[in-house]
Amino acid sequence: MNTSTRLKRGQILVLFVFGLIGLLAFTALALDGGMVYADRRYDQSVADAAAMAGARAAEEVIQSVLYDDFVCGSTPVNNAIAAAKLAAIARATANLSASDLFPGVFDEDLSDDMGVEVVCEPAERNLRVIVRVASETRTSFAHLVFGQNGIRNEVISVVRLAPSTPLAYGNAIVSLNHGPCTGNDKGTVFGGGGSNDVSINIKQGGIFSNSCIERGGKFAVTVEDGSVNHRSGYTSNGNGSITPPPQQTTEMITVDDTWSPVCGPARSVSDATTLGTAKLVQPGTYMGGIKITGGNWVFEEGLYCLHGNLDINGGNVTGGCTVAEYTGPNAPGPAGTCDSGGVTFYFQPDPNNGKAGEIKITGGPIVKLYAPLSSEADPEIPGMLFYIPAPQAGSIDIAGNSQSEFRGTILAPASDVKLTGTQEASADFGVQIIGWNVTVGGTSSVNITYDPSTAVVFPAAADQYK
Image (cartoon, rainbow, N blue to C red):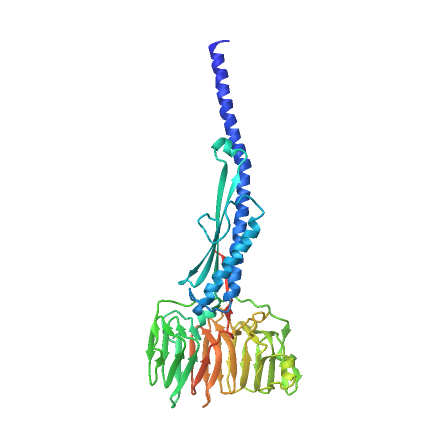
């Protein structure tokens, strides 16, 4: 055997050794890598479940705490944090006990990457439930190649919990027009009073205009338990003032306008049945809208989808009662009240002319309409009385009197809304008004009371943040 042949055989041996090492490395990667990946996925599922369990426990505690009342360090928030920690630890412990790959004890100590932390963020007004889980995967081959007995996994899960948040942050009057104040686009306008010095009183909610605020005539505007904000300017003409004084801000309110309620069967006003001295109207879809000019009418609780207008210019109209409530002992009758049920009016364009829905309640009728209160309301929208979704540009014109009652949120993001009092006695509205431009005025005093328990409120909600 010559020297050349011996060298070739030596080269093959070297190549075989390096090839074997590479093969072992790939084997280690395939087998041990799969084990590491499986363990890491399990760790992540444990962390996610624990973080969500903590957030759900905190949610139950602060469900009744509204956005404006959410204060880090307060008793309700501290109670929510404590509940979150207990629930997260319990859930993680239950899932970790089945494995011996977790060397640490799951608790509130994060130094070993095995625990839960709940952070209150005052600026964002929310809680963050942070869960860390660490484990060690024992390898079968990798330690022979890389010299490590195990591979450490570390994962994190963060769930963010937002408190219950009223639509438009609990402002009673909101104009969403954010353009220049010209022509009919003036944001929020208060005007009228005639020859009398009358007032607009707003309780438990503020005023916010994405553009301007204008006050004129003999109206004095008073806001209790709320602020008055605008982005583009404030003008005042005539007698009166606004208390507290309007403040300019750089912030702007946007509205979540994503409801798509499921409408009921097609109906018409002629389908109304007799109920004592009144006509009973059933929930459903009204092509061409609804018009009432006189008489006694009852809208039974439920969702009313109108392809057209709601026009009421006479009579007595009550909405939100069940038939039993209306006809039973001590029933309210046409001019009474009913509070257990509720109605939502949802407007779509008229198929005959393509025009967006309009609401006109004028001419002195006695109208009592109540939005549904229960969060379980379906298909009607809890807290919502009138809803004209964007981009429909309809209009709302409601002239109230001392006997009329309205309860709930009036939401028309692309439509102009006008609310007036027309009699010497004051007109009372238990509503939240959100429109493109909003005008409040008339010839008599107007009282607007915002109540989050009767308006649209987004409940406390948790979402996976990380």
